Image 1 (cartoon, rainbow, N blue to C red):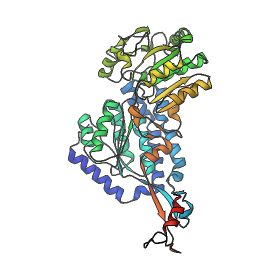
Image 2 (image 1 turned 180 degrees about the vertical axis):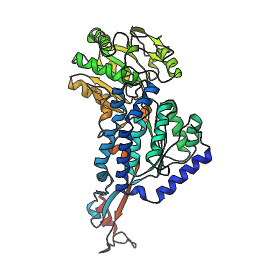
Image 3 (image 1 turned 45 degrees about the vertical axis):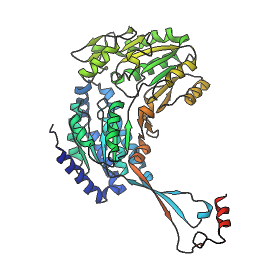
Image 4 (image 1 turned 90 degrees about the vertical axis):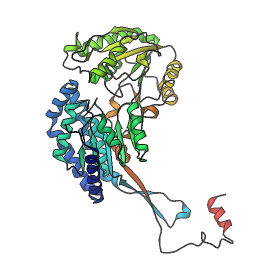
Length: 461
């Protein structure tokens, strides 16, 4: 990996700005072709993607296909809908503007910067790129250096399939990110933690650059007594421990109705064993923690509450077993920040108001999960809490629906993407009003004498 100097970065940005000015990316057929090339990139290199993710995170082939290579579906959705998204849309005009017509033209922003995370290092750099391509932008991609094998692969593949004046990957660590953020872009799209998100936003503010921040937070999972226990357990365990819990929308902690807690805990323990065996460390389906730093941070959380399942670690392989914690307090370290690992605290409640108040006492999460067959309870939680998104009687699956905007609120993020939302994020809606030369009404021109009464009627005042 070669570290680029500031002059090199400036040269790349200038090159892309020049290419954007040719107008080539504004052609919808050009964008469609590029999306098809992106799909080809993914399909033709599935084995290489699988190997890179195995090296970085010890991901199983199944999880790689489900959560990384599955980005193909997002590309397909854009290919199917891009021509409709890019069409100018008619806007209504009031009766007193009867001689006008109004339209909204989506236009590309220019040169955008996409900064990817390490937890889903392939999918979460390609998915926002789908929106950038669809909207007609040039893109600079900065993959996470914490997942080096995937970052290097993304760099190789993008340079093979796309010219650098259109899409370019810049690899590097914190210093490279700082150099990139010092430059002016037309949009910055960042996926990562809240602390770094603040740094990105502060850097962008110096150039008045708009940002999309896909962050995270402590996504709560409410479990009511009116549930199908078997289905609930499987969906929670899968959603929490996929990618070893290193998922921004993983259930961070459970809020469980006291009446079913004992049965739930026993079923959770049993399900972990069914999924990963007696010893998850030798399971081919359970990934590893990304780095020593993250491993050390997570192992400290094991001192909180009482370990009722799991708790085993291996510092040599960055393994932390799927772990359940009981008797956890909201003042414990594990409840002070997003866990982002295979540790699941279980907190009981006696009344739903208590659970809602606990959620509302924390920053707004990226996701909120509700397990209940009680429609009134579902509605109450929806109305009285705020989160980036909600999934009822399941976990994680909301991210797979391209027609649903995905993004946070408050500390969990700014803006959204996926499908049309991704196209909109990387577009500017240009309002265009058109008058006719066939006639001209004099009511608005000076002198104004005798015209005020007509103006009042038009305004309604």
